[in-house]
Amino acid sequence: MSEKLLTDVQRRWNEISANIAAAAAASERNMEEVTLMAVTKTVPPEKVNEAIAAGCRLLGENRVQELLEKYEQYDKRAKIHFIGKLQTNKVKYIADKVDMIESVDSIRLAQEIDKRCALIGKTMDILLEVNIADEANKSGFGYDDIPNAVEEIRRFEHLKLRGFMTIGRFGAEIEETRGYFKKMHALLVDIRSKKIDNKDISILSMGMSGDYMIAVQEGATVVRVGRGLFGERKSVL
Ligand SMILES: *Cc1c(COP(=O)(O)O)cnc(C)c1O
View 1 (cartoon, rainbow, N blue to C red):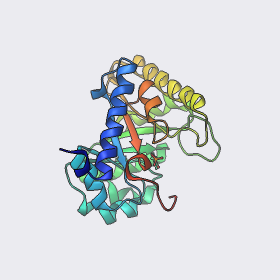
View 2 (cartoon, rainbow, N blue to C red; view 1 turned 45 degrees about the horizontal axis):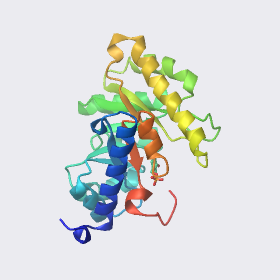
View 3 (cartoon, rainbow, N blue to C red; view 1 turned 120 degrees about the horizontal axis):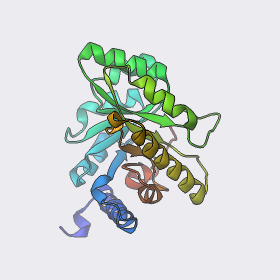
View 4 (spheres, rainbow, N blue to C red; view 1 turned 90 degrees about the vertical axis):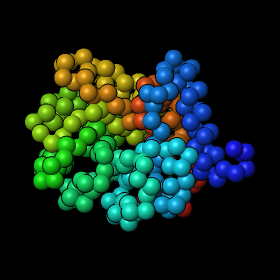
């Protein structure tokens, strides 16, 4: 297909995919280990579907209300991960619609997801969100609290812990960010080495438009890209 027949979204999808392949190759990783997620906040469903037509198979949703409004119009070939702040009283609206909740930031939220999933007969894949830069205003588990949290999550029959997610620190220099990503990778390796039944804990969701290539170099298995794929957002959510 000639370049000019592609939409902007499709062209950017191809560019970002090529960047991921290059970053993976440079760090001797297999690009198959890395999934490019399209973060859809404020983006109309038609545009999201352009990304899916280009090959995207994973969407990242931040807001419950926005997901509910757009859900029916999404091309169903893509899976959906919830990545935003999730209030316990909203879990019931999305439990049947998402394939993973990446932003589990408290045991209380985990408990509520478990409860809803028990009601609908589903086991939910989850990631624990890690407040890696230890910021007072950011949600997520503290780095040092993760080993305990992993043990606590085990008692929920309708949850399956698959790994960790982090957002990093806004405004951080690239080398500071690289340090956070390295720490996240070390955490994953450490937790996996602790117990044989931790082998399913294998996902590291980190890296956004500004730093996804660094994240790939440091071991990310999911990178979450919004603006780089869909263009700048008009409003910040
Ligand atoms: C918005 C958002 C992203 C994507 O950020 P961009 O800078 O648009 O790539 C990734 N992760 C989370 C949790 C987000 O809210």
